[in-house]
Length: 322
Image (cartoon, rainbow, N blue to C red; front, top):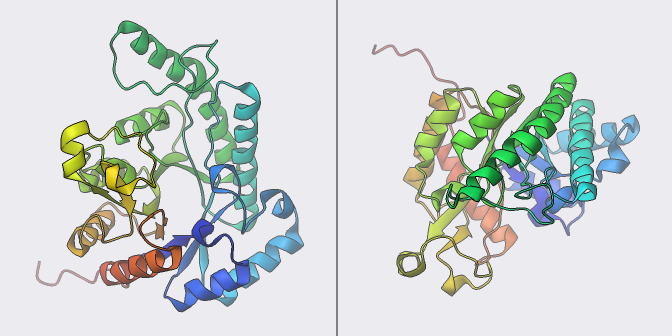
């Protein structure tokens, strides 16, 4: 496994300086944002797509720093009830898949997206309960009328290019937990899998290692985001974990995204690494820094420090004792 980094947190720094810095702190893989919510500061999709010279220059720069590209990311909402926004998101994903194919990158990370609750809605609607009954009806509409047709076409496009589409399970998206991910995968094809980000699962009360086993045993983990979350029980005991306070109102929130090791200890992350190996995942652990209590560089460096002690650098030997 490689310790990787989603470079968005360093987006204000030039690409060559970013790669040099990450290599110096022991990173082995990079993930580039190329559109959508994560932006494209280090990989402007439209500039690189179909430009072999620019692509070769990028690959040589990455290789010069002994790095690999684990994924391209274009997190967006291809199911948005506004047709123009949905079409733009679908195009971003399609072009990211094409660019990944041209660069020899296996994975494109994104969200499932979230439709409205009916054909006349103007904003996305996250359904979290089956009652009153119109909510169950809305959920059926979201899956059968919007998500399955859209994602069937995207999955076929990904398969045509030999690229995986990795869904980040995220609240306020249609797919926000493992069984929903499997529902989408089973309705489309095996190019659809997880960009497994535990930070969104912790505060939902999901056991992360059990979720890794569930998806890993179904060969449904394509990529992994290393990102932590801390639940602050003093607030959660009063108002629960469905928290609409701004992320920057840290003292008032029930939970916060944290740097690796500041939500769960090093032993937990070693357990994650071991469980990933048990289910056959040997890809990157791509750090996504979104900790508002520290700077990007410090958060990344502390995360790298923990993960470097957690990852295995060699393949298992023969179990001579068995």
